[in-house]
Image 1 (cartoon, rainbow, N blue to C red):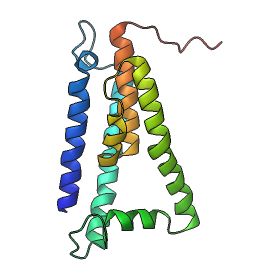
Image 2: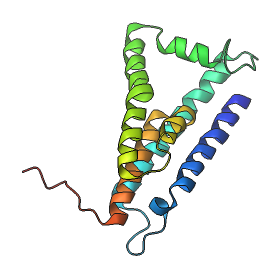
Image 3: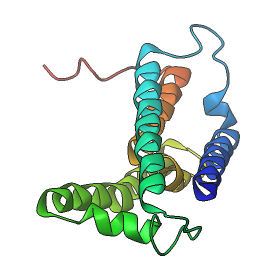
Image 4: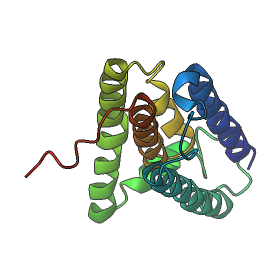
Amino acid sequence: MLSLIAHAALGVAVVWFLVASNRPIFRRPATGSLFSPLECVYYAVGIASVALGWYFNIRFVREYADGNANPIWGDGSWAQYIKLMYVNPAASSAGQDYTIGNVILLPLMTIIDGRRRGIRRPWLYFVSSLFTSFAFAWAFYLATTERQRRLTGSPSHAHDET
């Protein structure tokens, strides 16, 4: 259980550091609401992802750890978690999809697009996914870019496709 508490603390620390690194983006808007409806949707999805993930992670540790305090190797560890993610063809299909999305596509997208947008330390979105969830990191990045768009007054391109 100590490893889960450490993960939670590291997740909060990374998110805090990302927000602190990008104060201009996360400042209170001069006009309008604090959060747009779209930002609220992104945050709700991200928070739900973390809550569901924690539910299953706590169950995993309780059911598999058997007193093992090592979060890296052995029963209830990261190694066993990853091994079980590939335990059968159905799980392997989902596991490889998640792994590619989280370890390759999320960092590529957030780092490249984040730098283009002037987001400081965009690689922290990937780091946050290691302690929160892939869906949280992705939703947090989307909420950040939506907030940035709203604060800079950039028009939405939703109506461009006709």
